[in-house]
Length: 79
View 1: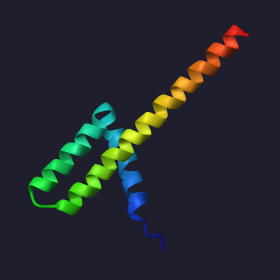
View 2: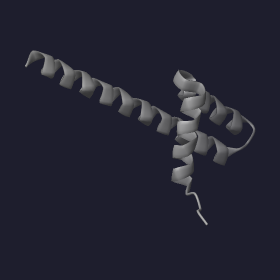
View 3: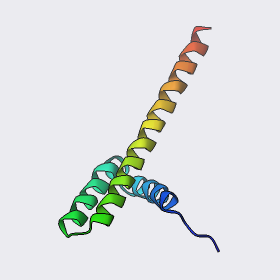
């Protein structure tokens, strides 16, 4: 039986939320966290903040990879 760790669940939800909400994913996850906290669910708030942070991290990694690809392409053109 496969048991999902908290870290794995956060990563899975971050990927799902990004696919579902695209550019609004981080903001939407943060709104979910605020909503949960306002209803007294501190653990839910913490988890959704972690999901939002994971979304931001994934987006940063994608942007960095794209920049690296552009640099490589430009250097190949200059050769």
